[in-house]
Image (cartoon, rainbow, N blue to C red; front, side, top):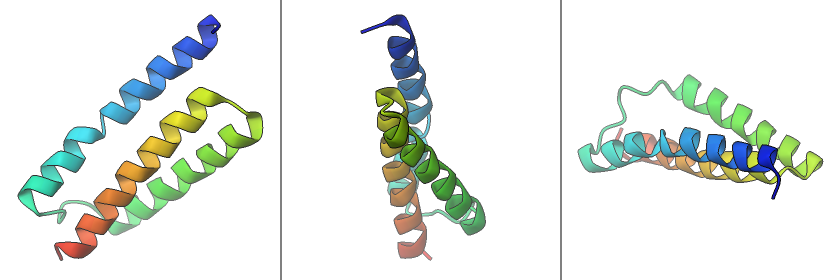
Length: 84
């Protein structure tokens, strides 16, 4: 694995992990009222497009980071809908 791939994997890991505490907090508190639905949908669309970009470029760090971030954001959307 070359340096740029490792750099991308580390960057993707950190930005994805940064979102995890919010998912856990939302799950535990059973409240997602502070999240704007518009922001969640816009963010999901952007992350999904980055995922498609990574797949098109066959770029593993971009694919992994955005796939995991997309899943975490979908969890927040489901929880926001569930805890309305």
